[in-house]
Image (cartoon, rainbow, N blue to C red; front, side, top):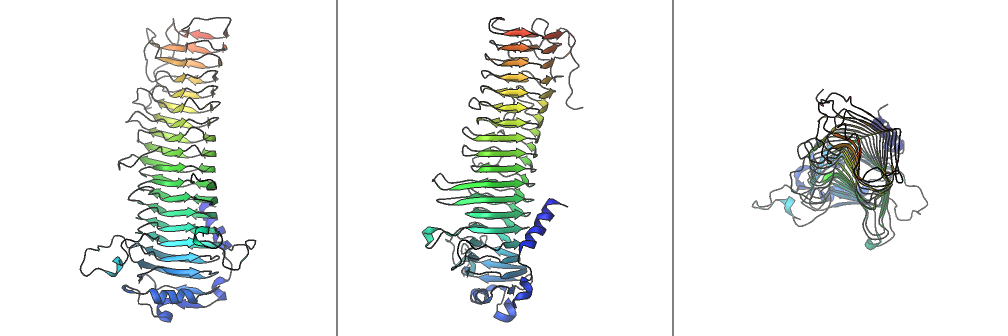
Length: 561
C-alpha cells in the first residue's frame, strides 16, 4: 500500500468513530440565515453557528459559496465538532484573520478555504468592506492549544484533523498551529495530536503553514507554495520561541515550491528553553524555493526519500545551500533523497561548524553546479560527519576546483566511504580536516587531483580511481591522488591514468611522510612520477611496501556514454 495513503487511513481512523451520527447537523444558511454571497458581512451569523455546535455536531457551509466576515471568528474550548466546508470559502477582511480555535480538540474541518483577501484593491472609492483592517497582520486560520478549561494535563487529547483545508492570500500565515503561552494568561497549552491531510497554503505573505509549540503534528500531502514577500517566507515553518517545545513533527508527501524563503524551515530560538526535536521530512518534493529547500537548527531530524530539483536563485534574497544544517543541528540523517538539476553556485548540503552526528547516505546527486562551476554537493564542517554510499554524478564539471565532497578543516574524524563519483570537476573529493577516513570509493571520469587530502593523519584506503576524463599534465597540481600532510595511511588504492604517449599525469603524489604507503596500484601515469614523494622517501618515517606500477593505463573516459 502507498505510504501516504496508509497514513491518511490511519489518521482518519484516529478520529472518533460515530461523530457524525452522535450530534445535530446544522446548515449555515438555512439554520443561521447567513447570506454567503461574498459581500454581506456574515460574521454574526457564522459566530452564532460556531457557538451552537457541540460535541458530535456538524456545521455545513453552503457548497462552493463564499461567506464574508469583517472580523475574526472564534471557537474556545470546543471538542468533537465537525465543520464541513463543501468547497466553500471563508473570506475575511485584509489582515483580520478568518478563524481562531483555542483550547479545543477532537474536531475536524473539511474542504474549506480560508482566504485572507490581501490582494484586494483598497484604493477604490468607496473603500471595500474587505479593507476594514488594512494594517492588521493576523493569520487566516489559527489553532492554539488542545486542552479545554477544566481538563487536567493527564487527560488524553483526542486527535484533530484538517482535510483539504486551504489557507490562501493571508497578510501573515495561511495556517498557524501554535500553543497558548503564559504571556497570554493562564497555563501553557501546546497543540497536540493534530493532522493536516491534503491541505494547501498558497500566496501568503509570511509563511504558508507555521507549526509552533506542537506535539505529534502530521502534515500529509498538500501544496505549500509562493509564500513570502520577505523572509522567512517558508512554505512550512516549524519553529519554537521562549519556553516552547516542538516535538514529533512529520511532513510527508507534500510539495513545496516557489517560496521566497525555504521550502521547510526548522528552527529554534536562541533563548534557553526553545527546542525543536524529532522532526521527519519524508517523501516530499522541493523545487525553486529561493532561499533553499530546508534550513535546520533542530535535533533528531530525518530528511529521507525526498526529491529536490530545479533550484536556481534569482530573487536576490539571502541564499543558502539547498539543505543547510546550522550549528545547533544534532543527530541528523539525510538519506535516500534525489537531488538534481541544481545550479545555485552554493553547496547542495552544507553542514556548519559545531553541528554534531550528521549522516549523508544513499542519496543521488545529479547535475549540480555544472555552469557556475562552484559549490560542492556536500560541504561538511562538522566533527564526525559521515558521507556514505551516495552517488555523485556531473558535479561542477566546468570548475577549476570542484568538488563533489568537501570536508573543511574543523570536520575532524569524519568518514567518506563507499560512494560512487562519476564525471566530477577537479578535486572530486577534497578534505582539509584531520583524521579523515576516505575508503572504498569509486571514481570514474574524474579530472585532476581526484582525491586531494590536506589533513593530518588521514586514512586513504581501498579507493578505485579511473579511467579519467582528461589526460592532465605533469605539474604537482595535477595528480590522481595528492596527500599533502604527514601521518596516516595510504593503502590498497588503485589509480589509472589515461594511456597516452608520453604519459603526463602524476599518479600518487605525497607531499610529506605518511606513516605507511602500502599495496597501492598505479598504472599509465608519468613513468617518473607514478608514486612520488616530494620530500623524498624517508624509511624512518614511512613504511613503503607492496606498491606496484604499470606503464599500461586506460582509454579516456567519455562521460556522455
